[in-house]
Length: 106
Image (cartoon, rainbow, N blue to C red; front, top):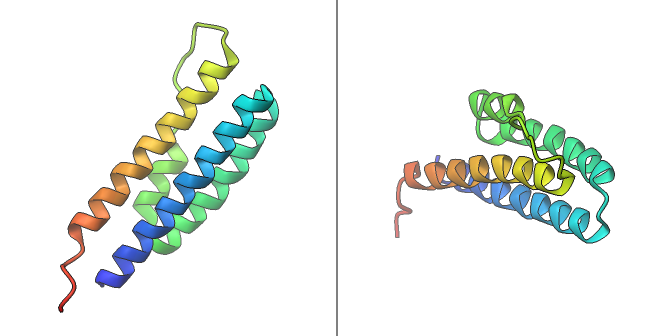
């Protein structure tokens, strides 16, 4: 069970890295339309991976996450807010999974 939890946490870490790469590229290119499309594809893949590795409830929670209301008309800020909502959920989930995994017998 510990290996399953640790592999789920490792998978989540990889998805966070992919999300960070999408965010970095979007900000560098200053193209939030393409970045939003990439993030949508990333989210679909990540929800499927979470379902396989961390369970249906973890996948459902990410799938339900939606960006909040934005009043700034700043597309980059709105994009980064959405990135941060996904990122913070996944980082917290990985920490919970690692904390729940029993220590390896040595």
